[in-house]
Length: 306
Image 1 (cartoon, rainbow, N blue to C red):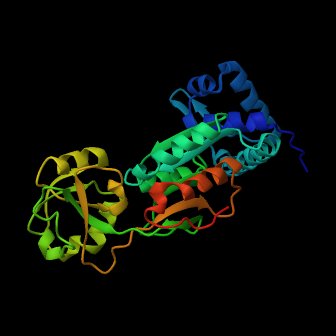
Image 2 (cartoon, rainbow, N blue to C red; image 1 turned 90 degrees about the vertical axis):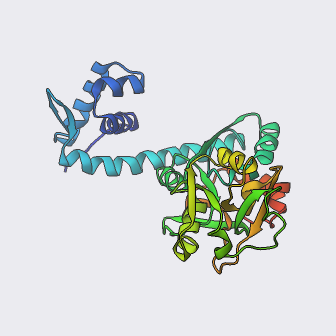
Image 3 (tube, rainbow, N blue to C red; image 1 turned 60 degrees about the vertical axis):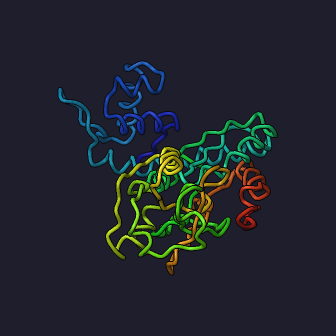
């Protein structure tokens, strides 16, 4: 039986080269020389007594053995990083970085908590990523973010657990001068009579719209945007109407959210985490502050995650 004595450093070098498939780019990303990287990869191949990369004049590619090692190497690095993070949390209580994924529609609810967290914990660096639901869930599974703040997905993932923060619903959003602004509710038939400016496909409100309303008729979609802030500006300054979660216009002046008379209008706000993953102390503290924010309390009480 061969005893392999590879180091964690070598595994990280291997994964970076497996990602970039270019010795020059990988060595730059790792802040080491290309010769050092080549030497470490050769040493790793010698220890396993197998070739991990095909090298030729056209570039670098993973062998079958390399692809198998990549899968296990990621697990090793993730476990090692989790161990280091646990030790850092125990030592410093709150330090390091907190990586948060936020969907565009959810972002208005976050400002108050972000500012309060930064004030209380200056030693924690916050990295906030605004992307679509699909992109953020991929980042979560790759452990590139610690948690995701988004509305409840239409398709569930058994690797991710979702904790409901508050109840919300899909609504028609119009300017406060729009003829519909004083209505208590709107039917799908009403909706078909007006020009729509919709969030782009892939955004949660659009997914819900397509599944619950889009098939009910032929809406007059005039424009689609993947930037909710610009979408709201258009609606505020015109007779266009849009469809978003009610909470998307939190603290927005000149706009009105009107309930739609449909059966499945729920868009619950959630915290999404990897199932059974370690939760940083800084993440728990962020949850606590979020639960006490006026933005969240306006819609509902936060489920106890602490």
